[in-house]
Amino acid sequence: MANITITRGNTLPDSSAKADFHNLIDQASAAITGIVNADIDGSAAIAGTKISPNFGAQTLTVNGVGITKFSTDGTMDDNSDAYLPTEKAVKTYVDNRKISSYFKTVTAAATDTAHIPEDGSIPQVTEGSQAIESVEITPSKIGNVFKIDVTVSLGVSTAATVAVPLFVYHDSAWVASAIKTSEEYLEDSSVLATVCYSHYFTVTSLTAHKFQVRFGAVGATSHINRIGNGATQPYGTSGNTTIIVTEVAQ
Image (spheres, rainbow, N blue to C red):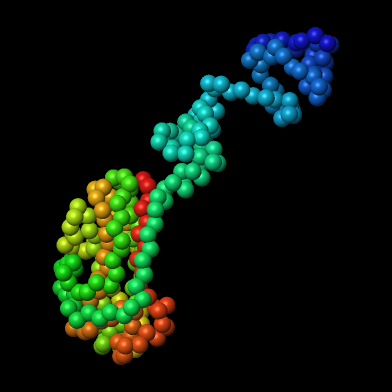
């Protein structure tokens, strides 16, 4: 059986040549050569095992977006709509976004009598008392983000609202004003309440960073890791205070 060449614009006549072409499609062992820019009828069915495509510089267009290549770049620095990442590239990118994570917990009880005013001003690093402070962390890249997760167990001597502000240290100094503040109202001294929040801080300096959580009420003595009507920890050291700092690549 001779090779058959089909050129765009030409059709096969009803002849033995056309039958030969159909036979080539049907035969698993046949090799089809010499088809140049041919249009394949929509009803044609060619087994995938018979095709070994080499797209070369061709563009695959889907919904108006032209895909020019499959990318194995796990950094995705090209930021291109024309590249389709492989599964491994996507996993590498996601895995590398979380650079490092630091955890610290405080189980001991502490008391504040200095208070944090509730007067419309931003809490200051000199107000209230320290609940917990992270270790020093040096970021790997300007523009990355620190995600800070805070959990504080609170008690009061009498009904009061307790503020729980977050402060940041960088460039060898504490920033005076809080970067985040949350609060909790405790109705009496028998209550152990928990404040939980997350905050995102964008890195602007490659110096060592620390994050500190403080606490304080207005007109009442407040505590961490214990209730207010006694020095007891009703749930032992499980009612603790924690801070988790995670650097996330951007």
